[in-house]
Length: 127
Image (cartoon, rainbow, N blue to C red; front, side, top):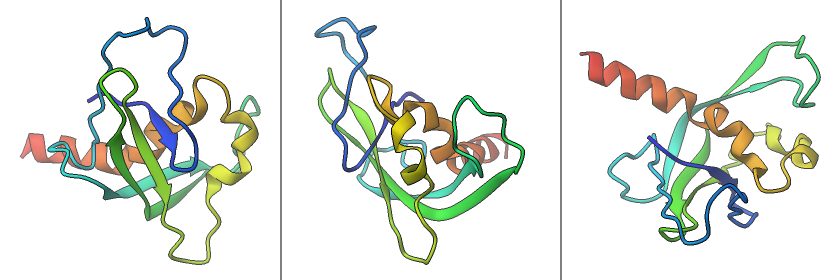
């Protein structure tokens, strides 16, 4: 699986390490067949999203809190992640916006968004 996440209200930003015109790919772990936007089964984030600071408080689970779909072209593809906001919780990425800038943007949170779907993919393959 391959993807680089970006938040729905942000632009897809490709880092300088990608050669201009080089192909990129996006495979949504929640929808390998790429049929469109689907709800991510479980996102997990540190309770303290201050990157570079040790996390002492543990982690918080966000089941069914985000939807994702691959967007873009073969040279700027990315996994667009959207907060569903269907309950009283606050999107944990809001607190981290200052760290989610530049060419990597939310790429540092890729595994946090899709951990539940990756585990489900592994479970299906081992049955």
